[in-house]
Length: 95
Image 1 (cartoon, rainbow, N blue to C red):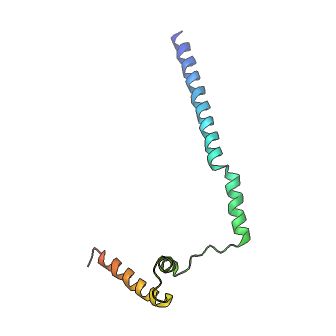
Image 2 (image 1 turned 60 degrees about the vertical axis):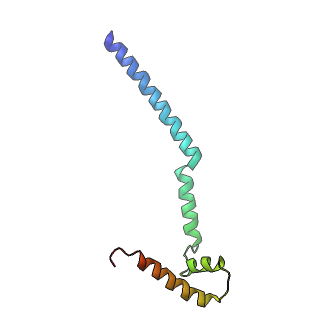
Image 3 (image 1 turned 90 degrees about the vertical axis):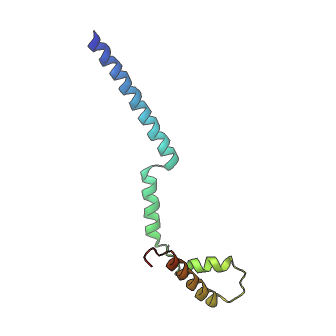
């Protein structure tokens, strides 16, 4: 009798956990979509041969856009690179 009760309790707990796992999986699928949708998006991007490269001077362009533009871009890049190199060198722990 005790063994039967234990088996019954274990079976009920197993079913509860299984239902909870199914519920969680459904919520994850709702939030993030199914893997098939992700695969279709990746395939779509690859098939369109989209250029997703980042321009070499992207950081300098962003900094120039937020500056007062008191100098032309080429001069700004030279100053920006020099300042950036100086900041990185100042943080070098092996100096």
